[in-house]
Length: 125
Image 1 (cartoon, helix red, strand yellow):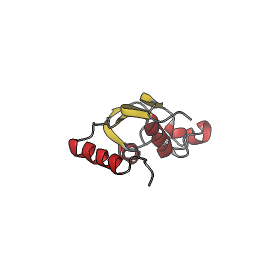
Image 2 (image 1 turned 180 degrees about the vertical axis):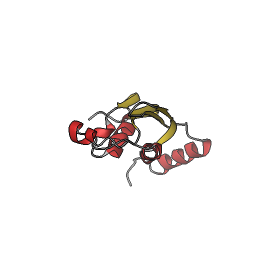
Image 3 (image 1 turned 60 degrees about the vertical axis):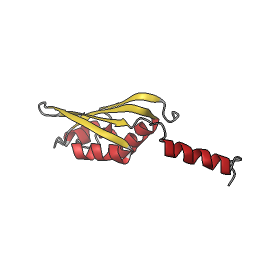
């Protein structure tokens, strides 16, 4: 397992349709992204090519934009754009999301943190 906040970019390319729990794969990608980091997912949009399940072990027959972007939101990412690349017979989509950059604390937050440290300098509760 990789440490959290390790990567600026994570790409999940043609993997989710094999995953039993694709939302967990997205959650793990979000975990290892640094603040401001980007996730790029490339996979199929919904289709009815059942032979891909039986002959090629696909667990999912594509994903909707809402499905992927909702999983990104649930993982704490800010969904971005989606692009569809129509093909015959499959359409490939590219979805993008990012982890919010860390912002410096506001003056009030910094003052509150400073007071908390002064009140309890040992860190013990």
